Image (cartoon, rainbow, N blue to C red; front, side, top):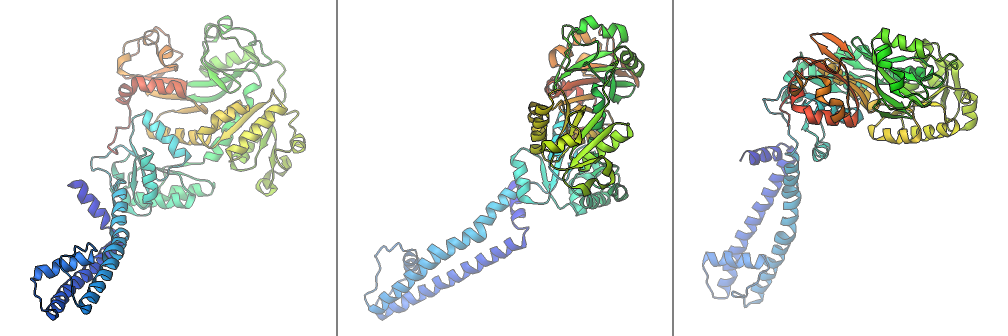
Length: 577
């Protein structure tokens, strides 16, 4: 009964549908009047022939004739009566077989089906909903964020203004709610006052409107918005955003940091508290040709080899792993430990760093600014020189797919190429082209959508940084008040509560690495970070694990310890289901 009531309410919510019902009712009233008139005329014509029938018989004859059943048990003998029969028959054909069915389907049945479909997309969340994340779009970053929310057992709901779009997302298994983004009542019905966060990742002006409208309904709500234009950051903060993401700038700077990866020594690429994550390129150093057992890095420097990069592929490092010239070691330790490693294995004659940036968009310009701050020479290849007018001395105008243009940009002596266009197809093409030109070149590529990451790796990219994954990680960091660090696409460092089943057990006893493929880099106990912990140290209750692993390893870890880890999460599960 409740479902029927909701369906009727949805059907009656539209003024057009209420008008359709009135039109159908008017047509039925006209039909009833015609039936009554024909029933009266039936008695008139029968009286002219000297016959009499009951009123029920007149109604019976009218309905039989109009419906074209034609039993033939009652017929007229006169020409006038037969002509009347033809008129009744034609009228019935038009009304009952053509006009009424078409009107019923168009004005009643089809809208009813639409209303039934629309009822699948709710217009309000249950009153018990709390701790959920509200999304106002479902693009690449939102889709990546939903996957991470599922890892941490945090509920979400996408607010969609269009019913058809909402139904499309619903059929894909996405939790949706129908509502206008500029209506405060939408956020009240979405229980925004009890939500953990609202995420607005549309255009700058739309995000400002969403933030102000949501603030009106829920003044204490945490709002995260994105800004394409740097000038929009202040406006979005004034509109009510607690965090404004400039993902183009963040992505460009992150790509620029990786240009150091093959200069020898160690280069810090991320940190979680006192823990540092660094890369160490093996090319040109004494690392090449030795196994990790022979190098004894843990004994000599107390650094942990968290894994090994080789041509864009990440794998766990074991004692028998041989370091090749293409290998990049992923190390974890304190600043002092990594500096000691760097002094021991620095490349004695590193080539001068020089980067070629393919694409002068927002990401390319951000990468150029970061390289300039770090003292690294670079050239930007861009078709439209007006986009990089402020960096004219470092710009080569032309098509990045043109060999002559690349040669003028310095591809022959570059140590790294940054592929930064916003089109994944073009990035795949340019990555493949540059890899064929310079097989030894360090290539960093941008992916807008996560599904294109593996294609970029196959094309020859050493590192791929995903726009979607980076944005999702930044939002998760704010949501969980933790450090979810993306080192490269598909490789993250995450801080999670210690699963209940591992309390009092050591890392050797837990077999986390063997069973899931993730590495424990540190254990945080009472705010104190134990970096590269002893594998035989019992892990106390209330501790947090700092893990590193690729996407497959993450899936295995959360599948095995999901309920136990979620119990310690700072964000309680909601009820947006």
